[in-house]
Image (cartoon, rainbow over all chains, first blue to last red):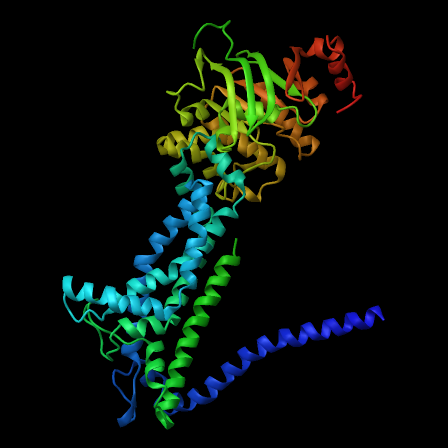
Length: 281
Length: 254
């Protein structure tokens, strides 16, 4: 009796666990089946490094979009990572409990804002500010980077903070007992000891930025061209799919799936690297 | 240096609190230069709190609070013009659990020296001296660049002692430094304590009464936040004045 119900619950949990894995397998297989033929037809090199994206002429080169994704993401990392790490250090080491209890939920709330709202706010507020003060169309790498920097903050802050708080308190006490001040303790003991967690936080933040679609569609300008400065518009891999999927057919549609494959590989590599680094002690 | 007869530490009517709970109820104690003073007592006696008060590591807990005076060389350590980092450099501490930093053996010991900007040549010399004093040099001299974490528990604890000694403190506090260690490592640490007391003042919470008997000059017995009595180890172990001390050292409770 007992063992029967146990077997049943085992089976139910197994089936449910399997369904989440099978979703992954299904999606992966689907985009591979849809996208791989066109890559094979064009050639991987020409697809990845091709400069022209002209679906009507049958030219599919996504290099400008790879540059777009990478530049917006690097910009987001440059702006967001230092702020995020400093914020996490402040929360873990300096903030009085009351302030911590206000900051932490506030930062988590940041993660709960829908990305379309970020994009809308960026379009109404950031884009005109850039156009008025720095020149250019406003719709630009810079605008996208600022929005993405804010969007990766919750990821960077919470993972960095957790990895600092996970350190044995003996590190801190040992350093303080040697007569180090707080900043010396943080810079020479806590940050090096939490290094792998912090790197993982940064990589996961970058993964989040590279995968983001809605917010960047609205502020990046979406021009398929190599940018010359941070004030130029770009199109990312994600926005390419998001913009054109509505009307794409045939080879065009396959090329969008192929774009998805490239994106998929980039994010897989980032996440695997993050997990590997976080696990290494 | 000051007068030789002047005590290193003079604790006057010290009370310690965690939020509203009084855990030390007004202690008076003098700690002499170059002695090994053992503080013995059962759990919750306030020994760890007392040790952590002497270098103000208790400040880390925002709920802790002290009253009374702790005078180090004629100066109250609770005075507002005391620089806590300097105090902790003068009053070093070794914890009950070995706490090597995630660095090499050499860097663990050189760590505090780097912060006070000692030159490279002096640092190497100082590291060797400190490792010799803590009786670890012979065991690690050929692998100074391996991680401190790769050492055994006993070696790690001596590494932590070397890290403290390298900074040449005046007082060394040890909070049950041998609690998780094997008898041989314990003996090594005790030997080196006996050797270094010529240079330092040592306050130790030994992990048992036998250790206090082996290494101390004087022994203090604490119980539930009170210092019951403090005297030479001969008197504490053979002819204590208080019945509770007698009961504790003879193993009737504790």
